[in-house]
Length: 401
Image (tube, rainbow, N blue to C red):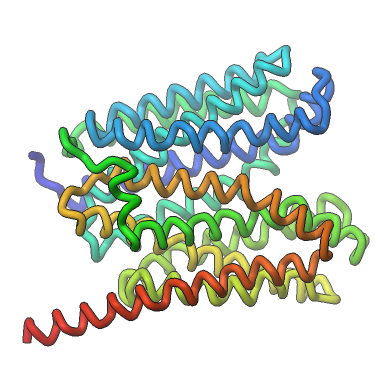
């Protein structure tokens, strides 16, 4: 096996960070464009909802398959498959003239994300030791937030500049450039394959992994709770225009992006479970706060806190899952991060439905308070596991001395 040098680690981190950034950039690129175009093709509001949901559905279905495959055949080849899928999806978007073509393109985008995320994160787990994974994966996740932040505004601006096709053709060019980068920088990386890896069902018997998967569901559901509910609240309470609402939504994403690398580094020092517990507590406070402010400045401040808290919940989960897989005695990082992606996509599906139903039933403030209480309750569920881990660690330290 090739020696893992710091240069190779940094090359892998760059490739994975850019891959995640590009995936989320194109994910957000379509947000201001597709509803109008799909409507022009005859799609109903329900059809438009299905169009956007097809990404998460494809991600949910494909992730376990390609996670297991990356353990079997290695990481580099699936990374290139993911890129080809993303390029094909963007070109299909550009030249779609029927609603079913849009559905196919969006689902193909979700399929490409399933391949890229599981293989990319597994590469980082392969190359970085446990004590450095938190920082590395935190840096990679900052690419996710940056892509989400830039995607919608870039898509809207390019649409106004050159029409419907321009944003997708631009994205296809970026995908090709990213492909060249992946081929060049990943060619000398050591491959880790496993002929006998843990199945997702085998890993899911691990209590710690189940608990972390629940954290991922909560962490991904929080921003998607806001998307269908907070804009209407801001319009009614502050008479906010859509452009200003878009700027406010950029605040938690930006604070998430800036905080995630530092949170990853902190979680490596204090322990992943402790970092997650703190994150859940802060989410339980910050989410209800985002429905209370009477001024825009306070609203912005509450969204900054919410973005940081989302980073504190999600960033420690990736290295924690890698450690759980490693401690199982048979590290199967592909299937481990497939579980992460599956949990994340489930949260993306669950969040908008839960937020909308609760807001209709009990109002925005109580709905956000209810979701915050779920985060708090889950923190209490995790506490016994955290205490057992601490007792084990202290006993191990005492034995070593």
